[in-house]
Image (cartoon, rainbow, N blue to C red; front, side):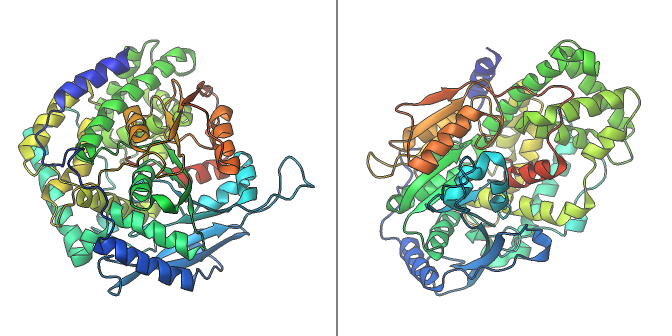
Length: 547
């Protein structure tokens, strides 16, 4: 029971003194706050204006049938007559076509709005998912609606640095960083936080999860929907749960896929520590899979031997980066993606095997950063940082970060320090911090909600799904056992998909919490899918999601 042992060890380490509000003391959403009144004003205006859908921008590469528009929201909901920003929206209207009966016309049930997480991921590509067989029945009954949340893409884009300044050279990513290396990363975190403040100005504080939830209600109204049907994945489950807390009477149906832990005391510092511990388990799963296929890869017939092969590659890359650009940091990033999706396992194992046998080509192709996506990556990182830093208190004393991550890295070295550096700007954040809302609904306040989780999800550890179920009364949890894919709706598990379809199409949930057997593991010769299908999956789920 390695997972239980590590979680127990991590739990004993994360006894950090932090000024976050405890679960019982965080404020429940006030009914008559200025922001609530502002949301009502903005929603009424959006309903009157609607969304003028038309041709999508050329860089969207949208297929026929997908259209785009914008919805206007206040930057600050406490002042709905103040500065306004526009969120981009995409839509594919319900096809009405039953994929199993060409003569049957399926009635429209409304709009299904999707968010893929992040924070910072865009849902603009979501309507294209209706082209996939797993989604055709849902696409027949619903308009599939995606959007770019505030700060993302064309939606009042947020930036913290010039994308040309993004590191493109080989990175080291030490698992036991030296004092000098830590000092360098602290300086970088401070500079990044300053850059966010300089580029965003006074608007920086308004990029947060509560405003994402309020924006969702304005979008609902602009679409002409009396009640919202929503699917959120990863971070999207958190502000989906905030929406349920703020606007329970506005919910029709809600699917929360790969939930993050909504406990106010976990947002976001402790959640990230828990994530780092969980990635160690998933990294072990991956190594065990490689070991079972030693005849294909020759990386070792035990998980420990595979670890040794990986560390050998790290050492070589530190001395001489592959292709001049792939160092230990790029290697770690490529293998981190395999912690999210096991269909990435064959390509990563193959690249590592080829590199150690003298052919760096597959690893270079897999792990070299793409200059063409630098602006998108910078924007995603800026929104991720702003939202998480704004949402809650973070430790402001480096000694706390150093203590917690040093202890955790002893048992979970794979991701701990890289995750810490990703979030360290929050220690020096210049904008005011919020107290997280106490996500919670009582019996009968919210329509029954469907929660989906893979038992070994590393990016959103399973305890988050259990906590979400406890906090949203009348919710039902469907678990994919012994699996770790981050986001399981519409994937390869027919059992999971049947529960999603029954809920979205008929409002039907399991009588009690259900479980599904795991989907089949990939085979060494398997590929992630055709290029077009894989590109779509990457766009929808967001390989770079942190939560």
